[in-house]
Amino acid sequence: MTPTYPPPDVARIQTRTLTLLFVTQILGGVGVAVGIAVGALLLEDLTGTSALAGLGQSSAVIGGALLAIPIVRVTGARGRRHGLVLAYASGVVGALLVAGALYLRSAPLAFVGMFLLGGGTAANLQARYAAADLAAPARRARQLSIVVWATTIGAVTGPSLAPLADDTLREQLSGPRYAGPFLASAVGFALAAVLLWTFLRPDPLRIARSLTDTGEAAPRASVGQGWREFRRNRTARLGVLAVALGHLVMVAVMAMTPIHIKHGMTDPDQVTTVVGVVLSLHIAGMYALSPVAGLLADRWGQRPVILLGIALLVAACATAGTAGHDHTRLAVGLVLLGLGWSCTMVAGSAMLTGAVPTDRRPGLQGLSDLTMGIAGALAGALSGFVVELAGYPWLALLAAITVLPVTVLVWRARDTGKGGTS
Image 1 (spheres, helix red, strand yellow):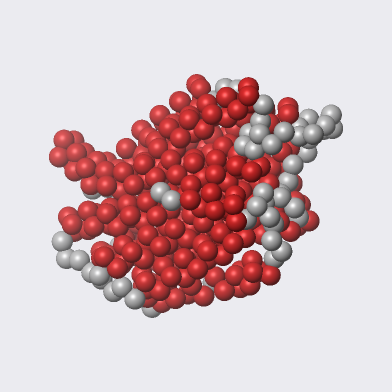
Image 2 (spheres, one colour):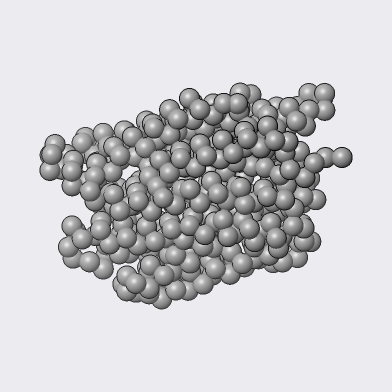
């Protein structure tokens, strides 16, 4: 009979893993959030148009998505430690390239840097699966959500630190506007990579595989292998779609909020501060209550929590889209947007992880991150053009409309049960 909880030695490894991931998520969260806070602003400054500013955010999202492909292969072959360090290393290089692009006034270099900066996002996302490798099924969503929650500290602090990093570099070294925050991102990613490389031993994925070893050769981890799981497993498919939906709506509205705020203000020195506060609250909504989403997913089942997330996303679009330039209402809308993302992310991730055996998880998880990234990249790319042509309220309306077809699929899907397995 399989025990409900891991044996004591595995439990200690899981506790150690969760603690390390908690710390590195804080560092990685700073790096990601700083880039989100000022990425659109610096690209509008370099290109002179808000449409291309949206494409910059899209570059980071699609970079994180495409980097999932080599990360999955490395993770499958060598374990979580190597995959996570590879992702953070990409983030370091990307942040340095963006900072260099500001010195050189090179928009193409900035786009390349934003693409590689997506590695930091990929690492933060893959870390939630590392937390689930050794988790008991009845606690999978909660333990996964703990790592998601840890990002709160770094992610909320990051946008607020952006003005400080910006002012420090400009005053002390006469650097260009917006370069300081990206140098801070590089430091955060580098520290996270060093800690993981040094202390993520033993590797949680390798331990999980040893506990479920059947003597058969494990399938080679790849996004293609994940696609085959997606096609034949209804529960896995629903989890992947839920995660992608939440990310699409979140990125579409969030990416253009800094530009919308900027267009309603006359003092450029105040724009970064206001954007930092609003996005800090948004990111708090994304991460701060994720353990609640995990607890509800374990107790109620994952499908109801996904539906709750969809309802919050629609409410967010309605609030932000009708806010005008009222910064308070925009902040409320962005908090709701973050909460909706959290519910779909935590419940969907737990659902797809529990839907397949351990040796097949990396491929499906990589496919989920790739799909999520493509959805977010599409949203980021189109959002700038929508705002340029029709305005921010129309962007919010269109984002809300995209929720409806997937809502029907989730509602009609059979309940996957509290454990999330089929």
